Length: 319
Image (tube, rainbow, N blue to C red; front, side, top):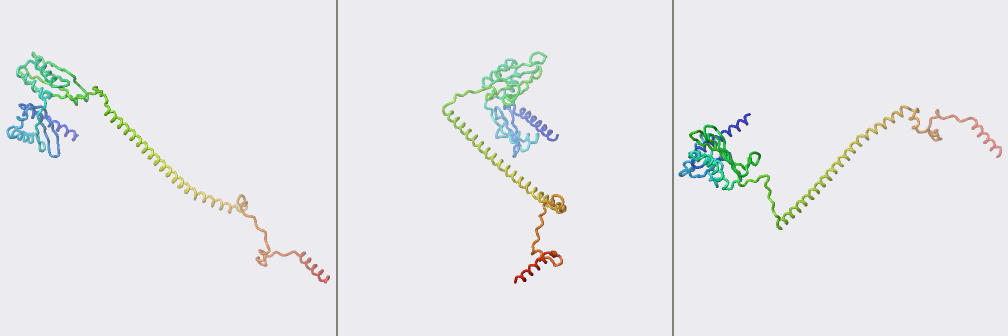
């Protein structure tokens, strides 16, 4: 809420400054005021019909005005600039002031309204509207409107191109409010379309621009393809790395399983699968029997010894 209050107070101060400038520069033909805040201070631009009345002799009037603005409205370092209106007939505020002064001098309201509209349209405006409201004739209040040309009542075209001015005419019967609305002659409306015949030079320029656009589009496509290829390579590398990590994690698990199977087979002994995997016992040789201890050597059969003795006896008999 604090920020909103600041905005409201700032706008109120600007409206009061505008009213103060209208009173002080009435003789010069007040046409508007523009207030801008800068790092050096506050710049106030006065638009008048006769800037000499505002500046004064040797700039004395404008100095007094800046001091009054500084102390009454408390602007930071105000700097007042005076600009002259190029065409007063296209300034809504100046025309409203002139219409109010003509009513105060005794002009009939219809004559004053029509003459104002005619003057504005002759100056080159696209459209204008004059509204007068108050005790125009008799004791009853009423409103009169005079308009000509193109007028916008709402939307962005009105905000951008319609200029409005307001003044008050003080008469014996009462006050009359005068509103003048002028559409800028340089206004470009949304429904206005210009058709231009292309010249050979413009055609060449358009072709060059089209070729440039095509080349840029092709470059963008190539860049997109490169980016996509690089992204695909990155994704593939990431997938390979993930596969390697998973394989490394699975290998120790398989070795653990194999060791567990071996242990289970040893425990089982000759039963089951463990018995089938055990190698068959080798046949015993003589060397292995020689190495064996004498206690462990097997006893030879007695029949063999008798045969040997019989062979010896037969040999001795033959000799």
